[in-house]
Length: 109
Image (cartoon, rainbow, N blue to C red; front, side):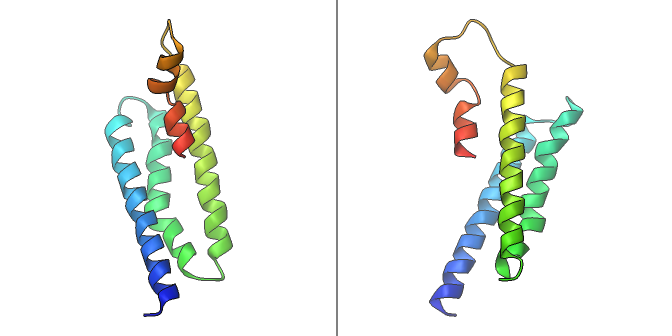
């Protein structure tokens, strides 16, 4: 195994591990039985675990992997922002906006 293929394997493994972790967190928080719109994080998690990683393995499909991953990030940012606005609490203070809202989660994405 060359250094290049080793680094690629480690990065791809980290991507899949982060995707699985995010999927498990989302399935715990966003129960589809409570709200049918929670299917969006479920489908995005499945795509990140099963569909997108093979795109990163081959040189010909690498650009498609980046595009799909970026699209999933945009969808995640928009839906988290909508979820934060829909479940907003009042009254708020600046520490509440930073620590109790979805702002930090959106910044991580």
